[in-house]
Length: 324
Ligand SMILES: [Zn+2]
Image (cartoon, rainbow, N blue to C red; front, side):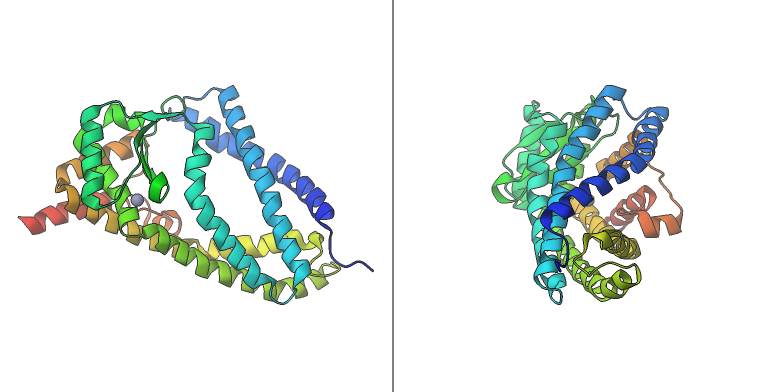
């Protein structure tokens, strides 16, 4: 008898599961991503524009997810005792590649980019990048404004592809000093290798999660009547185990992230020496993006990857106090 599921069975199964999950999720993502965003005056997108973005995201995420699951079941068929080791290594490699490529390849599918026109700001940010010792290949205006009122900025890519992205909404509302302090924070994540720390933590958690799945999958599969661990019918069990573990890991990941964010804030204050611009940029970001400046401590501990705006402003005030 043939054991396990062929790649074709896995693909058909995943297409059906994917369709069901997409239909279930649709009302929730419509409410949170369209209705709420319009109710609070954040989104500027038409219903057609929103639908187009959803379809584009599905066209990218769908085939990619199926490919990832195909590889996983290939490993389950290949070696039922060491699949979790191979799966962890491949998954981590995938995360490293995507962290580098996604902002460069995927963001342009959803947004337009053009070099920042203001020469003074170009010079200011280029000088800042040189001071931090990080080469950037360009400073680009990110067309968020046609979709949302929210402001954002990022430093994406690595090595020769590293670039600074400043949203048009940030350019409209922030002074050059404020933009510089925001970019100093973003550059710090590259200067201090925060991206690699993040990947290291992700790697440890990935090994733990796949190991737990390796231990739990055989008894769970048996009790639900699957023909073996490589039977794709047990995919919901595998997904349940992985989702539960990632929810349990959420406070750890966010605690770690908040430490790095505080380090980046301190770095931005140090490199620019401009606590006033830091505080006003924090206030503006919170106002434009409708961020709760002082969230519930338990909610913050579990769900927030950044310290509260109030804490970040207090950090700047403390630094000024120390330097007086
Ligand atoms: Zn940050």
